[in-house]
Length: 157
Image 1 (cartoon, rainbow, N blue to C red):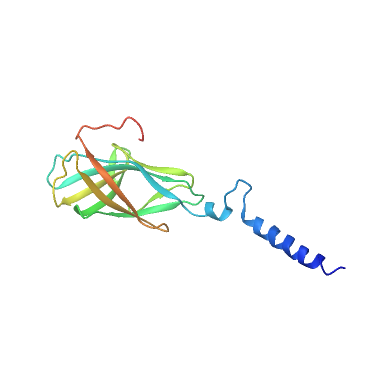
Image 2: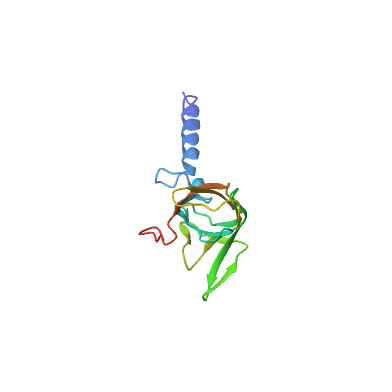
């Protein structure tokens, strides 16, 4: 009569172990152990120069681990560099941190993308595609609408 208790005990043990990966909210603890990146509010003001343009966006990290933006590429430009503004001075950055459960904001007067050696001058109503590269996350492809040169977003920055 004790033998039927062994399968029941094994099933109970398996169920208990299966519950170890949950944080009690219905999501796995492991899913919060990495960056979960997305991009919002991306745009490029129509460039006034034939060879250079700026780009702005917000990288959102819903994950529990920070990541770092290491580079940006685009078929539209010979080079895309990441810049930050510190004390009113623009400087190129090798990498910028996307904090866990946070955002990395690119806006006029702050962090921004610089498109150099443009292959064409993007016009209002067109789009420009960029690929964001990170230390640990997969690349993120972003389509940036080209807005008027004087465009200022109402929200998102």
